[in-house]
Image (tube, rainbow, N blue to C red):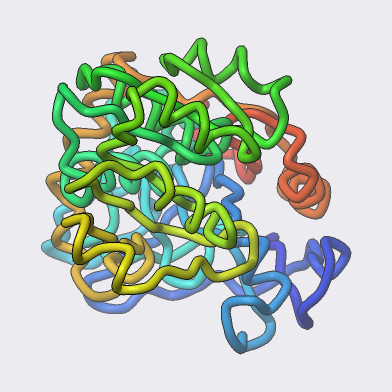
Length: 328
C-alpha cells in the first residue's frame, strides 16, 4: 500500500510517499480502507520531534474516514461499513488498523470529506465545552485561535448551545469575517483581547476561556478571567509553556483545567463513544459544519504541512487518500 512515512525529524520534506506493507489486525481491531484523513497541528509537532522520540519509520495522522475492509469474527462491524476512526499507528496511508473502541459508524448522509474533518477537532471541542468548561447559557466565553479546526468547532457549538457572548481571537484580522460567520460576537487579536474582554464585560472578565496557544496568551487570559471563572488549557501551538502561580487561582476562586484527547484515547477510549454519537448526529443533521480549507492528495502531504505551518488558512486541511472501491 502507499503511505506517507518519515525516517527522521525535520521540515515538510522529510515526508516521503512510499510503498509499505499493509498492516494486519489483531483481536479487537479493524482494518480500514481510508478515503480521507485530516492534518492536525499535532502532526506538525510530531514531524519536528517536539512530542518526544519516535520509532522510525514513522506514520503521522490522528484520524481517518473510510470503510471497513476486514474485521475479526463477532465484531460489531462488517466489511463495507462507513466509519471514522482514530487509527493505531497513524492515518497517512491507504489502509490503517484501529481499536474497535475507537471506530464509529457514520450515516450515508455524511460525506467522507466532512467525516474526515470531524473526529479530532469535533470530539475535542464538544468535550471542552460541555465536560471540562461546563459552559452555561449566561456565560461570556473566550476562544483563542478561533479560525483553526478546534476553534471553528468551539465557536459553532457554543453558538448552537446559546452562550451569551462569544469573544474570539485570531492571529490576523483578515480572518475576522470567517470567525464571525461561524457565530462569534466579537473578534480581536492576541494583542488586544484582554482590553476587549474587560470592556465588553464591564470589567468582570470572561467566565470560561479556551486556550490552545499557551505561552504569554495563558498569562494574558488570567488577566481577564472572571472570579469563579475557568481557564481550559488544551494545547501549546505557540511552542511555549504557559505559566501561572497559585496566587492566580486561590483567592479569586478560579480554576485551571487541562485536557488531552490523545491521553483520553489511550487511557479511557470508552469515554468517547457517547461523544461520538452526539457529534456525528449534529454534523449529519448539518447543525454544525467544519469548513474545509484545502484538500491535498496523499502524495502532497508535505504541501499540506506547509500550508498548516503558514497559518494562512481557515478551517480544516485534508488529505485525499483512496477512492478505489469507495463511493465518495
